Image (cartoon, rainbow, N blue to C red; front, top):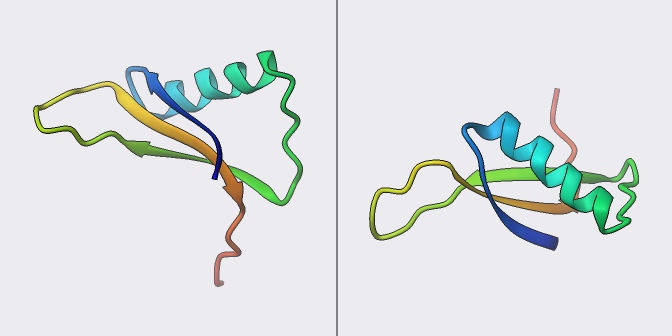
Length: 63
């Protein structure tokens, strides 16, 4: 995993868009073998709108 970032956003789609903007500002170009993953952040208390975003190798999906 590379370029891990916690993003505050309303939903997973907004989080992904915000994360792609962060990567763009850092000059990171994604290659086709890489994928952006967005996961819910779990904390000891209820927190809404926090998403863990990172770039990793894309995992092939079975048909």
